[in-house]
Length: 366
Length: 222
Image 1 (spheres, chains in turn orange, brown):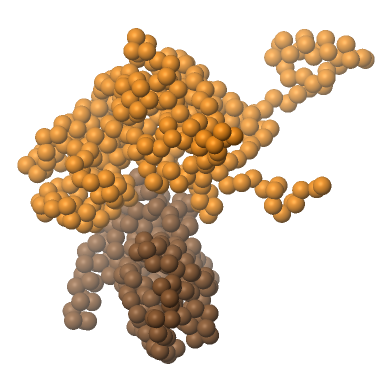
Image 2 (cartoon, chains in turn red, green):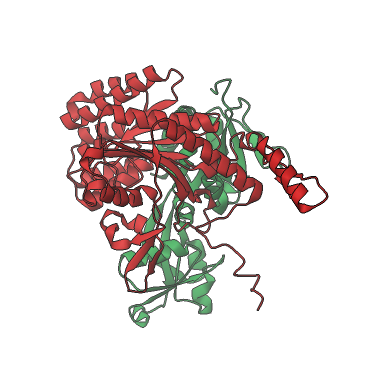
């Protein structure tokens, strides 16, 4: 029976396919990034496509849980499709790693499956390439991962971009003692730079007006390490010691990035507090001129592995490579080879001719 | 002023009355636009801002997809699209109220604990009543929502109310004000992050004019 062309021949929302020339370019781009990650000492990992939902349920916010595709296996267990590679990787690596193995550098390139708003194709992204440094919580580890992302974006050929660096630890220092619901409202307000809601929620929780004013200035800040130092100096009396420590850590990180990478496209952005509920420390996102969403995101998640039995820190990032394909010179760099026809009177002759020419790097069809 | 290497900021503005009010405000801030006949895009003479005239409900769509980096948009439209945009400023005009209204002679006892509501704002109506634990049936309408109670489609409507004259003309009354609606300068988050300094300069330029107009409006209405 023929398929109903109006319905089943469409691809459901939340996945995509790409073919031939486009798939070739994507594969080449992914390989190029992977080669870079290998040179930095990162080895590949492959995570399962689905896993038990209950293993991750406690780590998911209400909003995250809504985006996950769930299914029930034949034994009645609830499963979830891989919606975020970091989560799946944490469980798998947590099971196989021992303390003696650390630190470990892992990279991945794989599909993710999550629900997307039918009317919001701008957020559609179903392929993540990334890296994780597991087992160390030093500033050097944060620097390594941010610089690796920077090198990856250079390698891909992204023309103009900025990496915005913030801190979930700073948010936790400011609001970590508030009830979960207040924290959720504040997180959303800060991410959306909605300082009015930050004031409202803080005021409801009895925060004094002078401190609210300081928090508004802190969490709307974007600039460099000197500008942040000036802001922290001006607000010193209104900020907590733990907040000043996190600010100082970011200043140090930014200053070191500037010394290591002179054409530094780095900005301190304290409204960056991490897109995932498991983030704990430094967090960052990369923004490209002309693209409607960030194209890479990452951060530190020191509590995530502990959930799965191995209590070690980790930091990593993932790049949304598909978004970048239109914005780089990928089309010109990765032209699929045009296969030539093998010569010969019969199949064996054509086969031998093709083998010879393939040995010289040619692409030949029989 | 725009720096020589910066492309103009792009702002999607709804056609109609809001467009006139936005242009008036921008002109007071030194940003004048000349739209050629039938053209929907115009740049100010200093090349700082490019305005794009689009349908009101399409403003967040253009902004979300980065076609326009900024937009002028009410809370009502923004809520229906569910896009996450930054709200950079609140304008002193375009404010209104989202209200529940019914026929003057409607008896709430006939609702039997369940609301039947006709509206253009289906997401808002659905969420508003669900969050309060009130069972609701929402019927989507494209316009002339006031007719729904008159013709018997639904006893209630959820709609924007400014003066209330349209309601009164159809023998309807506001039974509850659900939300205050303001008009904002919104931004695509990635666009803002990339050009924050340039966008902030525009915001700083508009802010004094907005404050001045707000004060003027208060003294006029007060």
